[in-house]
Image 1 (cartoon, one colour):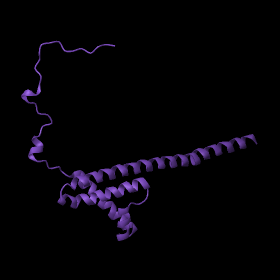
Image 2: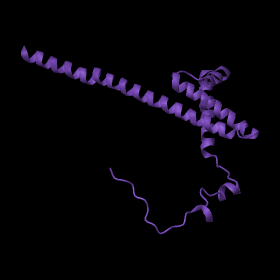
Image 3: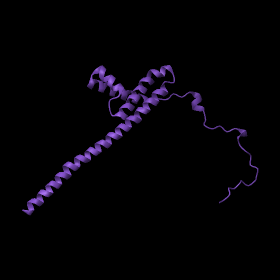
Image 4: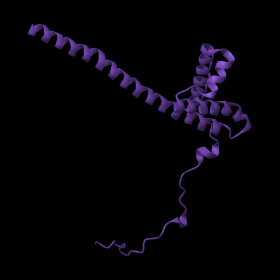
Length: 153
């Protein structure tokens, strides 16, 4: 009789270990991954907003910058709330839920890759501009005296 109870206790312990504890661990891991994913969505959306704003320095640049900034703001909303952002909702209203998600993902990815792959064109002045320029009167001539020493406490 004692051996049956002993085996039953071991079976119950293994059942808890491999089923209940594993399920709880997977839930904890899933919630951590979800939090990291949402944080990265907010950071990426912030980058899109900054890129879109930088592109809007000219009217022609705003043709590309405004949609990028708008998608970035929607990504920030999705990352903070965990719900669909306004841009994704708009795509879903136009194309249906599945097709709208695919279209939103394609446009979002396309604008992100375009922004990352964009080559910054620098003017000749910006390339030749130095951070520090030394001039003849910028320095103090050495007087030959010993430098001042800080008093010790």
